Amino acid sequence: MPELPEVETIVRMLLPNVEGKRIETAELRLGRMLLDMDPGNFSAALKGQSIDRILRRGKYIVMELTECALVIHLGMTGQLTFSPADYVENAGFVRTVTGMQKPKGVHPVDKHTHLILWLGNGERILFRDPRTFGKIFLVPAREWPKHPRLSILGEEPLQLRIKPFLETRFPAASARPVKALLLDQSFLAGVGNIYADEALFRSGIHPQTPVRNLKEPERVRLLEAVKEVLRKGIRNSGTSFSDYRKPDGTAGSNQEKLQVYGRGGEPCRKCRTPLRKSLVAQRGTVHCPVCQAKSAARRKS
DNA sequence: AATTCGCCCTGTCGGC
DNA sequence: TGCCGACAGGGCGAAT
Image (tube, rainbow, N blue to C red; front, side, top):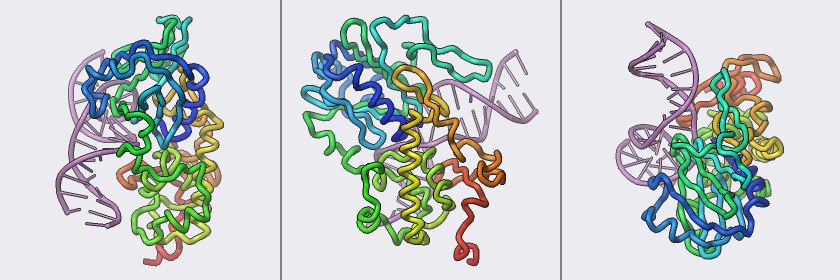
């Protein structure tokens, strides 16, 4: 699940390879990945435009082109890779005994490759997404922040200042579980299941805790923890738990550093208690029953 | 008005 | 060995 750190890594690594280059041909191979537009018009709209800038907003990748913005959401299994001029076609994935796809060179062009942007000299940007939860859309000129999908996004977690944010944007009276709030993109943009669980563990907060039960110090700790786990994710160039790959096709390393996500039943790295797996806000959730105990006030009731 | 639920989709895995 | 159901889940629109 590409979340903020994964998307940030992709944007940072893609930028030096493609900035200023011209899209010679845009090849959309699966029309339903494209929103609000006739696939037939898509290639014509992109042809000849230059890539002025690439940036991230929440989990969205925004490519600012000469006359519009190409916006991509990677969904659950989306991959955006750069295929250099000297790329050898047969150097794709190698399957290991455990069934993991081990990248060798960049991604192959296969039945899951839904968009190819040809940049000239054989260079390409490839969008591949086996589960097709990803989305592609175009926004005119520089109006991408006004697009309905982007205008609803909350603050960028890495930019926000905690004190003012707590006063103005934190739904202090809400009864919903704190994990549901973390996953809400109109609260914080870019936090997904992995980093929500990690932030809750780091701040010692039970994922089911109603938001209104969080005391001021806990709210501060939670927001600091969100920033920390995201920054750490970026430092490790993302979590390759399943499909996520960097633009060069290689895996990130943050999966080796995770404290709770994907570790249900395994011992807590702090207290050795078996981590508990549950369902919170319809999402698989892992937490430590000791390090993230429910508050005394809640236990009483 | 605020939350929750159902759905989209396909590869992987465990059980029999 | 092969079949099958369960599971993974981001975000939207419908339902509550």
